[in-house]
Amino acid sequence: MSYQPYPTGGSYQQYPGGGNQMAQRPPQPQSIRNAVLFMYAGAAISALSVILLLVFSGRIKNAIHKALVKANNKLISQGKTPLTAAQMHSTEVTLIVVIAVVLLIGVALWLWMAWANGRGRGWARIVATVLFALNTIYLLLSVSRATVSIVFVGLGWLCGLGAIIFLWNKNSTAYINSGKF
Image (cartoon, rainbow, N blue to C red; front, side, top):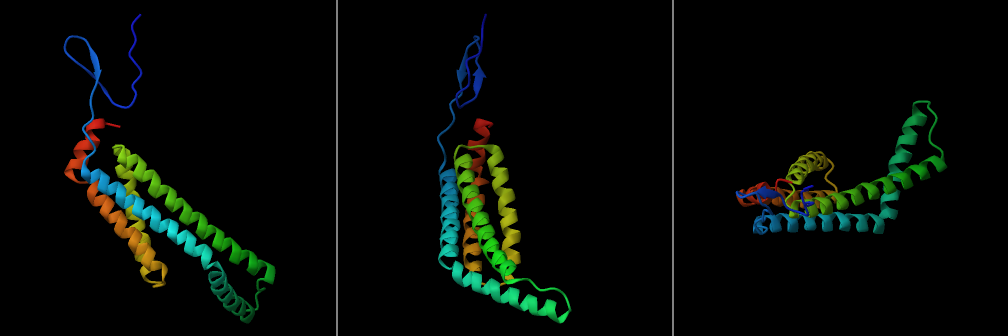
């Protein structure tokens, strides 16, 4: 009985004469390394955003509270039932937690894309491009609000742009195509 050895990270090629040998992948090009560095920078910016959210959570909760009071006054003027103090507090805390979770997911996505693209996974380049397109839409929506957060969104977008440019470089394409992962 004959069997094929289990592949361990590369692709096998059939050579004349009947032997199978693992194809050697070329060394990682500088363009992939640069893209991964941009992704790590994006992760760092997202992590910094989480830290700043936690540091300034009191101020953010106060801003949310003011917006809720304004919304309550509008409800009262329309003859509708306003939020209770407990509902307002729950809304404030929930919004802070949701924002923190979304930012942490962003950190995880940056790190996942850096890991997968650094290994030359073809699907990862496409996923990174789709995530960059979504980040571009978010940037455009954020510009209208013009808050301090736009600085971090803009910096993250620039990191994404740098990563995408390097990922679609011809050297990166050759490297990714060499592995067919």
